[in-house]
Image (cartoon, rainbow, N blue to C red):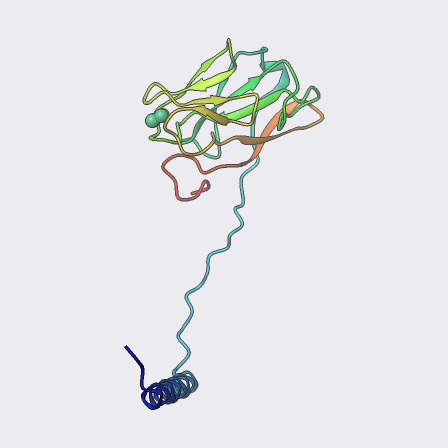
Length: 174
Ligand code: FES
């Protein structure tokens, strides 16, 4: 079908005129529209407590100790792995701590000393304690929350933060 050049030109002009009118209208609206009130934005920074969990002398190699951090409703384990790892604390860089609530649906995890993993009885997710809680199997969709540790001159181990969201929470510090 052949196009009529005059109709095409007329259509183009109407289109351009319409676009210009719309832009002018939008500009007019933006000039007279009142500025909406802004809701207060909560601070992104989280202030973690620094809680003493144990002393180095309390730990035996590859035997997990039950702890809670950042509060009593958040169970975890403190483990001296016996060899340095990324994220490990203490003079041997081998002390780590993790949440023991599975990030999938919150089942309690158990420690397997043979391969240094935390394992979920719910849907069988597994997390590597020598790799900062990396998920190595299963339904969970995030790595295991690792409690960040410092060790003072007296050998006291303090938890000072968490690197992932603890199961069931919208923020780690309630
Ligand atoms: Fe742990 Fe589902 S609750 S894998």
